[in-house]
Length: 239
Ligand code: 3SL
Image (cartoon, rainbow, N blue to C red; front, side, top):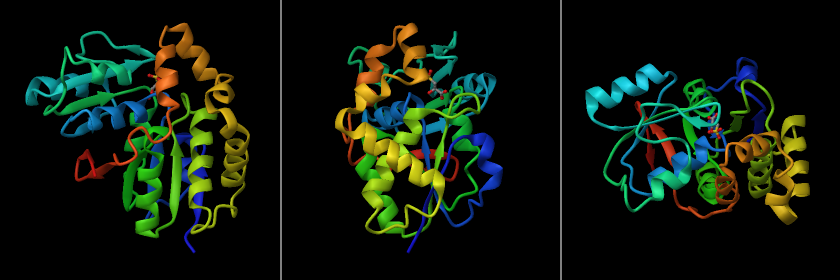
């Protein structure tokens, strides 16, 4: 039976062997929610990059849209930031465009997980798409939490627990303490996910940056139940 494990932060990734695994990259607030929303809105593909310079250069050279966030705020000089709502604005349609994206933690977690056999992006918005994909692959799953600057984040771990709960009949979700803990947290959170996660440090950071409406949006389970961003060659595409 395949195993689901969970890595609390990219800092811990050197302790895990990604080869042959399905890596599920999660940054609920907000990079993975933004990526799912952008692809659902018709963005052709997402190029996640580490540095602001690389992001700007991709925009100049290829003509793609650019989006960048640092410390919760849109970096100056880019077309878009890291709020899912920016990709849903009918006044500024994104459909048919490619997107280069650089964020504080989410794009780092993604780039550092590229040694896995399959790399997909997960968040509450597409929980069922991720679970379906994992069941199809029947490979071990590592949930890679983006965290915050190397530290543990409650919301990413709770998502890992939600995925563990969905996969529990078909996967071993209790052979690591990390997966066990995540599942327990999800069971605590499930009756009222937004109320539970309101306690988290990143929600307080977002609220203080007046991005609190993003929080409510990112809590919607399966709003985009069929959208699965998957790494193909050098980019994320909806699958
Ligand atoms: O760190 C990240 O990748 C971001 O998602 C953080 S924020 O939600 O934009 O503050």
